[in-house]
Length: 114
Image (cartoon, rainbow, N blue to C red; front, side, top):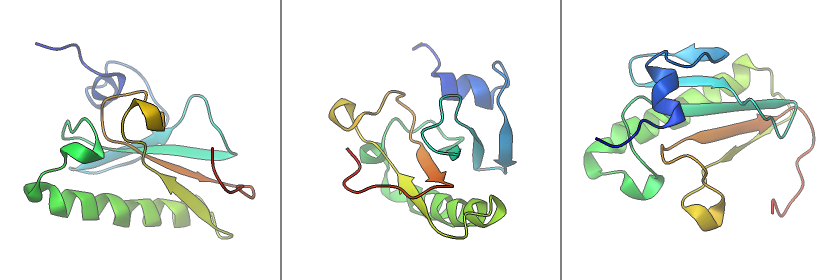
């Protein structure tokens, strides 16, 4: 059996996290190394390594993540805007092989991002 990712260990409550949202399908917590004043990671509880690994049966899960991201942005008072980032693969900077959305805000964010 492969080692658990850090995100799976957070889901399993083996590692503490500052959880800001949780339901049956997903969990959101503050990033321990924030890149903006607000930096929350939103993860599915289902272990999906990357966006490329989403299957047709994951369509409702992917939509749920988008709706929760918007709900969290409102909850976190990101009224002037926010950025959603999904890195896919090492060249994009994906460091954990568990699908996750970065919700970034609280300051103007430059473009291009990197």
